[in-house]
Amino acid sequence: MSIEDIIKKHVRESEERIQTKPKPEKKVRHMDFRTKVKTGIIKKSKHHSHYTKAGVYEIKCLNTGKVYVGQSTDIKKRWKEHKDLLNKAQHHNKRLQADWTLHGKEAFSFSIIQKHKPVPHYCFDGLVSNLIRMEKRYILQNKGRCYNIWLEDKTFISEDGTLFEGSFQK
Image: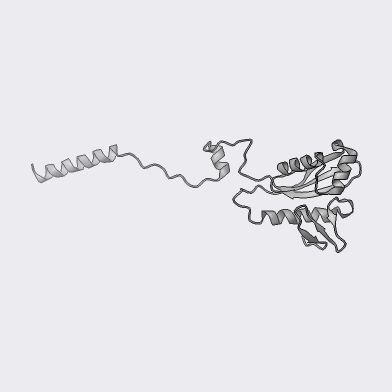
């Protein structure tokens, strides 16, 4: 066999290997949750969401016009907790409980005052402080007609026991 024949054979074998060699798989770049749902990688469940439903809400007595302002990282769950406690006459806010008992649940409305932008559960940095700031603003706006507890030194107690001063910067 001549050198030319060996080179031709080697070139032929190399070309065959290149043609039969499997192509490398495309690298999957990082996808956020919404993209994974859109592409079908993750099935979205109606019972479990990877994003919070956070914001500020109010419980309003339609007969008196008084409101209870609160904030939560999961408003739907928090409303259920309020309703359960009120129905069992065990709510921590005695004035709200008294009106609930007197007027009945039909006299109350639950509404979201302000939603917080969706935040993944693993990105809670600053979420709670933003919610508290939003809650405080609405309590100060409704100071005269709030069930939320005000103290004489112009502070109020939030439902989680947090004290706030009356002066507030937006």
